[in-house]
Amino acid sequence: MLSFKHIAINTTLLSLFCTPVFAADDSQEIDASDLTRANSTLMFQASNDGDLKASGSLSLNHANGQSSMVTLEGTMDKEGDYKDSRLQLFQVFNLDSKVSPRIAASLDFIDNKQFSTAALGAISIFKTPMDSLTFYGRAAVMGGEYSDSTTKAFNVSDSSIVGGMGAIYGVWQTGEDGTYLALYPEYDYLDGDITTETVKTTFQIATPLSQDKRHWGQIKVENTHGSMSSASINQDINDTVVWFVYKAFL
Image 1 (cartoon, helix red, strand yellow):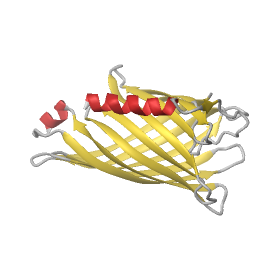
Image 2: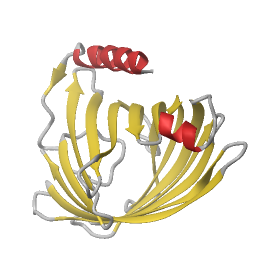
Image 3: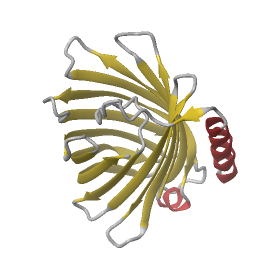
């Protein structure tokens, strides 16, 4: 699994950075709510459970009009121990469509105490007659393995995972300053000797902290409901976390 990750990461990064690129256009207005744009950002988050999360992304505009982004994210718990991490490679394609002007492909490598996975997915923007209301559709397929501690806890021997996810996101911009409300429901299914099925619902409110819209404050409420089960053990999941977020566009 580790060798597969390293090969995939190196290959994708090589193809990404060998494409001619130029600096981002600073004249483009920042839209913090758009999930299909590539931006260079820094983000720091703190949860009501005491977890701390930091992430950074680097965006590149290519000579062919496309754009891409690399994001690295890590989380530690209130004791200062490692909790999870994610590496995402993100490629945006512009389309000749008024309803869906952009679609993006992503490759995610996710590691936490329960499992490690690689996910290949896509997300598309869908405009509505109301300029303030936008929807996004996202889907992904994934594969990986459960951690040794997870397979032991569920009394199974095969750690392999295959699965997928689907989501429809809604974003409503409430004012000219860019403030927005968002609802992100997401369904995930991982199959193997251990079956994991979850519905994660995130409600988010975000507002700019500066006139140039480069600094943002966000509050996110995440609820995850579902279950993990094997032939002999079933564990319900029902968790709600509040995140306080600062995000800077570079």
